[in-house]
Each structure stands twice: as C-alpha cells, then as structure tokens.
Amino acid sequence: MPNPDQSAIPPDPAISLALDVMWARHRSQILERVSVLESAALAVTAESLTAADREAAHAAAHKLAGTLGMFNLMCGTDLARELELVYSQQSFPPATSGKHLASLAAELRTMIENRGPTAPPLL
Amino acid sequence: MSGHDFTACRKTPSGRGFEGARTYPCQQSHRYQRGFSRRGTVFLVEWRRTGLFPQPVPSLREVFSNWPPRLMIHSRCCSIRHQHELPATLPIDNPASAFDNDSGGLYNVGRKILIIDDEDDIREVASLSLETVAGWEVIKASSGAQGLARAAEQRPDAILLDVMMPGMDGPATFRELRKNPATAAIPVLLLTAKVQGTDQRRFADLGVEAVLFKPFDPLTLPTQISRALGWN
Image 1 (cartoon, each protein chain N blue to C red):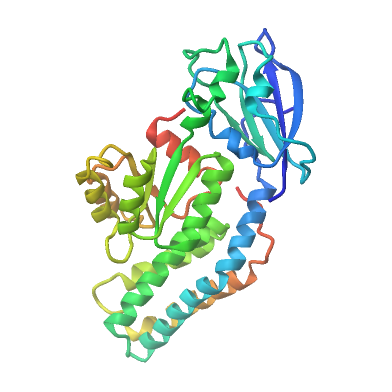
Image 2: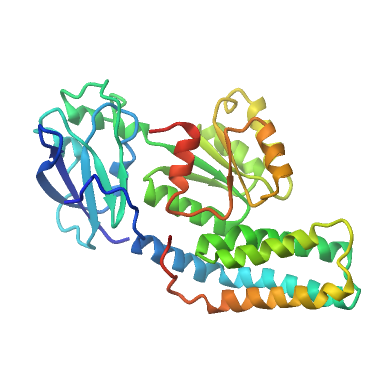
C-alpha cells in the first residue's frame, strides 16, 4: 500500500524504458542533425558557409536543444544552445571560429553515440 | 502492452490511513485514472505493472458500488504517484455513479490535451508523459493547419503548441484558434526551446495561458500544465 504522505517522485522504470525505445527510434534523425552542424562548421572554416547552410545549422541546433534534455542529455542541450546562438546571428561566424564549432559538434556526436539503450536515471 | 494490477482502498474514518484494499487485474488501468480529476469524490487507487490480466476486468462501478461514501483516490503507476484531492461538493453518497458514462460521471471528464508539434520525438515524449504519468487523453497534430482542424473537432481541454513549425508557426496557429468561436476559449500553452528573454516576452504578450520550455522533464510536464491552468 503506498503511503500517500510521501511526496517525492522517484524515477520510474517504465517511463525510462519507454524513453529508451523512443531514443532508439529517433537516434538516427538526431545524429543527422549533428551532421548538419558538422558540415556547417567545416564550411565556416573554409569560408564557404551560405545563408541556407547557416539557416539549416540554426534549425538543427534549435531542434537538438529542445530534444536532448528530454532524453536526459541536458549537457547536449547546453551545447546545442551554444551552437544555436552562433548560427542565429545576422553576421556569419568568422573562419577562426570553425575549429571551435567543429569541436562542439564533435562533442555532441560523442555524447549522443555514448547514450546507451539504457538511460541514466531520470531526475 | 503489459497489464497492471488495480488496487483500490478507502480512507479510514480518522483520515490518517487506508483500509479495505482490494486488487483487481486489469489491462488498461490508465483508462480509469482519466476520470479522477474534477469531481467531488476522492478515492485511493494504486496499480502495479504485472503483465497478468487473467480474469475479466471489473468495472469501477462494480469496484466501488459497495463502499462507504467517503473515499480517496490515489493513483500509482509503478513508482509515480499522483494525489488527486477533489472538492467535496459532488454526490459522494453513490461513488459508483461517478463512473457512469450516461450521467456524465467522472469517466467522461478526463483531461484531453492536443499536442501540436512538427517534431515526432517531441510529440511522442509529450504523449508518453501526459498519458502515462497523468493519465490524460492525448490528441496529436504535426502542423498548425492539422492542429486547427483537430482542435475544432475534438475540443480539447488545453492545447500544447510548438512555436517553431514550418508553414503556420505557433503564434499564427494561436491567432487562428482565437478567431474561431469553436476554439477561441481553449487554453493554449506555448512550448518553445527559445530561452532568450525577448522571445519569452513576445510569446507571453500573445495572450497564451503560459509558455513552457523545451526540453521538458517527462515526469513533471503534467504538473507544469496543471499549475499553469490552475487544475487540481
């Protein structure tokens, strides 16, 4: 019998399992978004970033920022927000920032690829 | 989907404990939870995942028909806990009537939420949260135009509306919802990954009920919505 006076909400294995299933289903789409960011970083370094590239990178970073934290990857959300801010500027990122942008994208990829089928506990 | 045990018990006269627990196997336990939000009777309910549902599922009318009037509901899905304390103003002399579809009982007044978001993963996780954690009914739409149609057809209790969508975005969808008398009064909560203050002020100025932020925690999203809308 549950004690109704208990107010803490512990992690729920059924929800974690369901999130893992959803993660597995959407992982490739999430990695595609990272690929967009990787390509954009290369284009920044090569000074070949177009307005369409920048818009695509902005959209990819925005979607990642909104998604990763739901799957208990809040650090990924923070990285994606940093990239979103860069690509939301009117001015194009300077070529010298390409290396940094590439490292952020690489960090995102590592984080996503390392998230196993079993998520760390929620909360 | 695996089944659940459905355990119900009543609050003791002192109000400090619970007694009379009975457990019933059932397959669609969250179906019951849907009704526990607006009416005066308070019950205590627990269910556990078991994967077993070997016998016919009793109706809630049957479960509660022989019980004294003062009951409490407490729902438990695995380790998630929801306490529904309800105003004691409705006929609690016959708890079973609360589940009577024909008389507009509890079963008919569960929350129905429309999620409008173009991203599959967001729709899926939000649905998981609202259906599993809160036991609400969820309708989904993947675009502003589809959302307008679903809102008019289904008349949800609230709409969770993404801001950035291709074509008709969240603010444009919100304005269309307000233009239609059929949907004008439905509370709308914007869902956005934008965290900059200027964006937040712009969204709040639209006249929506609240602005919620992505990423959300699936365990607490229903609470955020309930608090924003003043639901019990």
